[in-house]
Every structure is written in C-alpha cells, then in structure tokens.
Image (cartoon, rainbow, N blue to C red; front, top):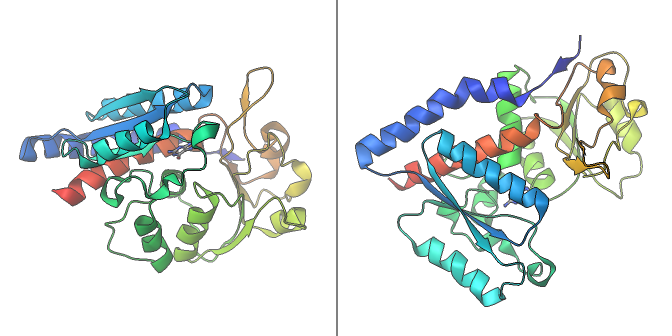
Amino acid sequence: MTEILYAKPAIDAELEALKSRTAKIKQEHGVIPTLRVILVGNDPGSIIYTNSKKKFCEKIGADCEIIKLDESVEEKVFLSEVDKLNKDMNVHAVLIQLPLPKHLSHIDTTNLVLPSKDVDGFHSENISRLYRNDKSETGLVPCTPKGILTLAKHYNFNFASKNVVIIGRSLIVGKPLSLLLTNLDATVTLAHSKTHNLKDLCLRADIIISACGKPKFLTSDYFRTDQSQIVIDVGINRLPNGTVCGDCDFDSIKDQLSAITPVPKGVGPMTIFSVAQNLLHALENSL
Ligand code: GUN
C-alpha cells in the first residue's frame, strides 16, 4: 500500500510542543514571539501563503502581522521598512514574501534581514552554517527543506545512504536542501532544467524531491513500478481551472510508489510549520 504523507499528523504531533515553548517564553521573559511579514503587491499565491503563516503563528500563541506595501512601492521605502523591522527590538523575526514585483526584483533580498531575525534562513550567514555542516544548532534553516525533514522524521524514513534526486536548484528549496541532505549522509543529485537524463536519474533514485514548478511534469514513466521509491512533491501549481496541483501527476503515479506527499496538504503546510519553529528558535537564541 502506498503511504500518503499528509502534513497534518506530522504537525499535530508537534503542535503542543510549540505552544508550550511559546508559553514558557511568555512566562519566563514576558515576551510574545513576534514575526513581521512584508508583503509587496497583490500576488494571489503570496496573499494565501502570508495569511497561512499569520494564522499558524497565532495558533501557537505568537504574534504575526503582515505589513502590506503597495505594488508600486518605491525601492527606498521598501528598504527602509526592512531596516525599521531589523532595528525594532520587539520584532524577533522578519520575512520578505517572494516574489517581489518586477521593479524590485533586481534586489538581492537574501542578506536584507539580519541573520538573527532571518526566519527564512536565506541569509549568507545561515546558509554558510549549512555549507559548513555547523552542528551548533544556532542557525536558522530554510523553511521548506526543514519542513521536509520534519515530515520524514514523523513518517520514519531517513536520508542516510539514500540516493536522492532533487529537481530544481532554487535558493529557496533545491540548493539548501541539497546541503541539508548531504549533511545527513544522503547521496544527492541536484537536477535542473538543463539536466539531460532526468528520467534515468529518477528511475535509479530511492527518493525523488521535485521543486521545479511544472504542473504534473513527473509522470508514471519517471518511476519504478515496485513501490520502492518515495516522492516528495514541493510544487504548488495553479491550473487554468483554478485547482492546485504539484509537479507530479499524483493520481497516475501514486500506486507505483512506497510513499508520496499530496498537493495540497503535503509540503506546503510543513513550510508554514517551519516558519513558526524558526520564529521561536530566533527568539530563543536571543534570550
Ligand atoms: N515564496 C515562496 N516560498 C517562499 C518562502 O519560503 N519564503 C519567502 N520569503 N517567500 C516565498
């Protein structure tokens, strides 16, 4: 039987622990963990994601406000907003929701938020910790890769000595995930749009993680039929009819596999869960 790796049981198992950590910080330090999310413009996906982040933070007793900036906001106003939040002692974590509108897309946002408040884990200082396999656990790990590890832990599979193919080399998912899994002793192949033999790579892999943003791109011929492979689908793609699907053609491949994450209700909520974990981690580091 193929196992469907839903996020909810993994999150529910950890929810009370997050609530307790929030309550402990409040009780011992009189501080409410506080996240500020900067949302520029009206991208429908970004509005949904930021609202979900706010809702989940509130569920664990933390404070999250979405700072909405106009689609046409001037670059200097945007930058000064980030600067203000960096300097605000009562704000413990800051997230700039991506993508930014075209006129701001030239800005390299990775190092804008202070590394100590970098809830996304994108800052060079945090990425450098992953690169060096720093074990001190003070760094903030990018949310989607971190969420994938939480999911794997809950469903009792690990990456050590596994052949893992990651499809997509983004700064948000593919590249940090390749470092994280290498540190966990996986043998990682980081594939991308210019990879020639993707089908062969997938057929030989133990675990396939897709983050390429192509709806239903991975069809049944990319996978073995012996229910020995695990597929983690990071894609959240909107079809013309409004429905959401992943990078995998879920219905046609699921029976071939050992396990697969659904879209929606798979990796997406795990990313949001990691934002809340990183918020608490950022604050705990500073106390
Ligand atoms: N847009 C899509 N995913 C993400 C993410 O993980 N962080 C930010 N800041 N923006 C995103």
